[in-house]
Image 1 (cartoon, one colour):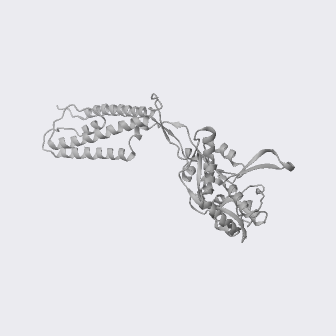
Image 2: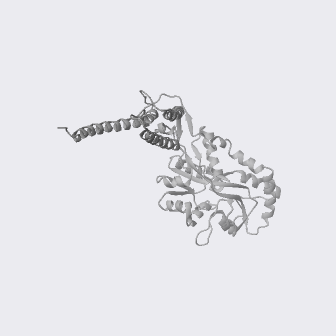
Image 3: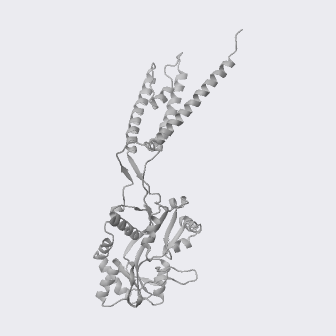
Length: 408
């Protein structure tokens, strides 16, 4: 249920709130059918759904249910074993997953696009085959009965680097091997050039935090969580695994907990900075995607591909409450009739527009130095290596002349 604080005061100088959402629509129909009236109350202070403290006490709405301050807890609440020992759940409303909400980056150019045209496996295979072919031809040439070599094995490397071959005289086996190598290099280089041209026209949009592992690996990333929720309780109880690592990161100041009341502007403020990642149910992520698209017409946020902690959500009532069976009958009918899903879609119009936004953009623009900086760097490294190779050859030739004995 979405609760928003309104400006100004109501009767008796009380703070005014606006309630909306599919759970409230569900309650209205059930109240009309069962002919009862209701009063909506917010949990005091923390505004939490309810977690169990180490001293055995509860907070939030669960505490209100236990203290008989409320008969029904709307929530909806994730079904957990700990809660089920203190309250009763109604018929489930939906199943949802916990995901991360992050800030999409600006369009960037891949500086090393000259290497990205081929996958690492293709580069490795190419160099391995070059070494094998070089060794094979060299050994066959040495085992040949010819007095002089017909073709240098280095010609295979020259064709790989698009260098010319001035002459060629060789045996038939050399023709076959060299011909197959030329055909392979033709296909490889043409594929490389076409892929490189496509990469130079593509801009990448960074979405760095699609998993908890990526958040943990980036020491500057901060996780934003709702305070006093099932997830925070899971983190505090974790003894090993990824959740234990997340809890340890929280002890280092990398977790910020916020109240559930009025969370939308708070989350927007943090996540918009880029290094903050909000974790919560996907239904809340859809709210941000909808608001972002409806208000600004763009997709500033993204939702992580990783899904964790599936929860079944339902309303809660007091333990052994007679309302439970009556509520279950009507909730089941409304869910089977598709009403609850319809109300959900009304809350999140156009959320699908930003659910899977493109991560690549094709542009038409002149190539800049930054775009080709990786290419120029590789060229510079080649010149440096060539210069040192030339110096080494000169020194080696002078050293060799000194070792030649003089015939007297």
